[in-house]
Image (cartoon, one colour):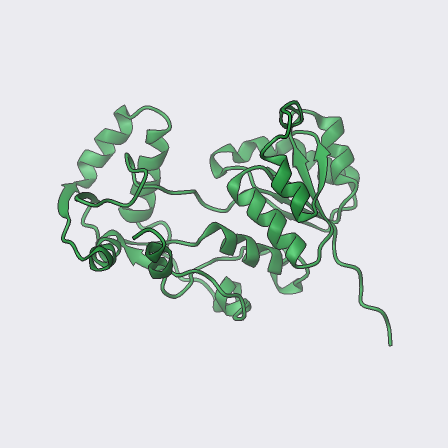
Length: 262
């Protein structure tokens, strides 16, 4: 009987972020030797908080950055798979990474930073308890996926030939809902009716024009997902949807997540 092929070596760029850390943990849990590219300033801090969980999980920490091409190339040459966890708004900063991947010649799969956005309602640090803002009509559906679940589905694709050079979509049943549905679900959980403040599409567009950064990015996300419907206006093949491809992966539903916030 032939021995099982060794697991792909994985490099996570942006490993100190929330999604990046989840990708590192998911990769290690799946048995992949996992490398975390960490910017030099993190090493300058004694007992650096971002490095400790990565090291404790078993990741190999490499010092480097997208601004230091030699360190980037050295890191890429050690792996078979590269996952970039930069925020989507910084996607163009991946260009040196793509150059390093091409020069190294050893990478069989690159998963770029196209994971969506880490969304919070503008002006809120916690779920509303008294009043809530509804943007547009409130009936357009968006998609919510917890970060650790995004990571688990992403890592499932690493050795899967079905996902090579394709886009994996995540539309988990129970996680596709409108703002009105989300608010109604939250009201049932806290047993309270919230005051609804309605912002029309026209007012939202005006707010986007005048809002400072980073609030502007939050409003752009709201407009895209919950007014224009950019998450759900198109049909997808079930063969490119994560929960269909990997039915054994347990994910957190919106309802389950809200239970943790009550």
